[in-house]
Length: 79
Image (cartoon, rainbow, N blue to C red):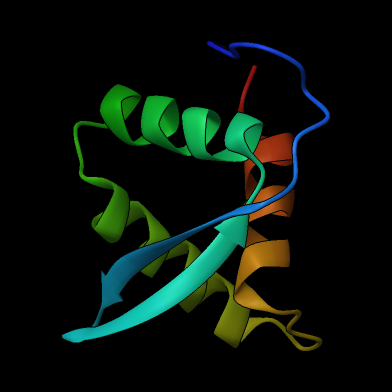
């Protein structure tokens, strides 16, 4: 996974669009890089991948926040 600089960097806030509305997500640069890579590997945009993760999160019996769900999804779905 491409990670530039130190992995110890504060979260960076970015906007994504899910189901037609924008929301802000704060993730560390490593997670943004990994999310971009995962979306590219699957032939989809970041918004589409985040929407997929959000659907899975909401369907969970114990849903966490969206940023946490993205982090967990990346850790469990990337090689």
